[in-house]
Length: 266
Image (cartoon, rainbow, N blue to C red; front, side, top):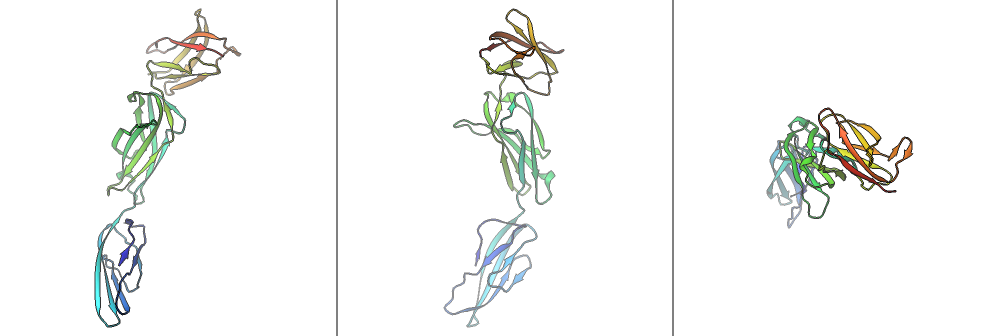
């Protein structure tokens, strides 16, 4: 007999093929699929209703009324889960605490039994996957403090779902950017030409203040603590900012950040 090589699941129709050789002619076939089902076809198909290991037996009879039989064990498993990463999205910039989001389903309706492993990897030669969290409940969300990443750059996140039978599936995000902050707020690019993005990590809502080198306030903006990036088009009072050196700081009720230096060069 011959059975397809790939593992079978309870959703699959398994194909069985008779490969008997004889000096005469085979005239009868009898298959026992190990779960109580039988067939007298030469090459039958069968779908298993439950997982497990089953001993399949084929008995053939030739034109001389001589029987012979062969057995083969087949393992039937539940189908593996499916997982899809929702966040981070392609090209997003992350810094500080962020939330990884995923969606994982299981054909056996055992979604709550799935366990999730989350990993990240720097998209550079020789960089391997590092664990964020393992054996997590399938809640669909996990808060990740990206400050554990010691090097800024382009990254990917991978989510792997494992079911109680050991079946697994994974999904990998597109590339996104992690900015590693050396202080509460940094500006990039620096020098800046057309715009500058302020990346920040603050415990409460704050206000960004930008001063010229003489100490005059030229720009201010509210920075929500729930966000971690703010883009400025380098305009103040409806006019482009002049070339030069500017100082910036973010202030809130909890603290005053270190003063940063931004160069505008058009």
